[in-house]
Image (cartoon, rainbow, N blue to C red; front, side):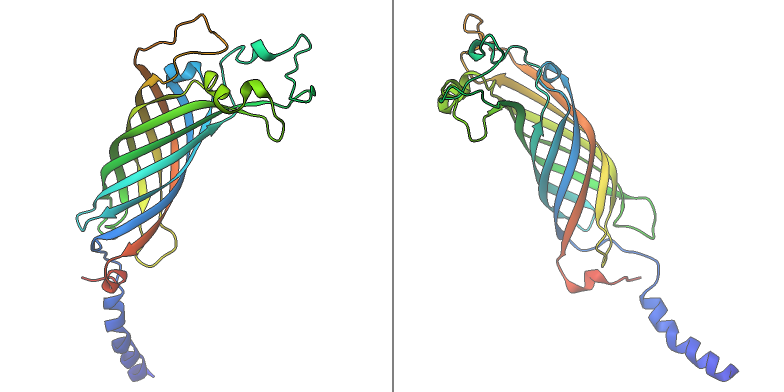
Length: 251
């Protein structure tokens, strides 16, 4: 029995050496991801919207030195708009907005937006046993767009349809800058490839409409705005390895 035990131990020794705990940084690969982020506004944006959500995707390329570049796009949406009296000029004395048939219409006032960034960053390993996971940071520059969406579902309200909506939507666009720091976990052959952390977004934007229908006597500002968003961001990576050997642990 002792001889059998020694033989089995020697037989499994090469297998253990191949599948050891030490890790190496993988070869360059493509990373595709989806994410969700909370959004608390700041700067000029805090006077227009309340809490918002961000949902989006990213696609990038990671080098063998753990540097990566990626593009990142998010859809911004929320239900808290802080512009008072936006539709007062088309609201009757009973507080109703009527549709084309003279019936009270259900009107929603929402926040909508888009942000798109080109980013560069790095994953800094915290352990020699997980060289593809650790502190992840990145910075980026791109585009920021936000507006007020007026929604009437299936009803038709002539004064807020088609181009008339542009007089109320407060369309604002400009350049955006982003920063992120958190933790990323990239496993070689596991489904669990995720990241999470905190982010900040700064936009230097301008109003793109020349008149507000709810304030026709007020001149639309032409000054630069400072629109800020910050919060927590979590995401899931789908890695595409460049070679088959990337799935294995080497010494």
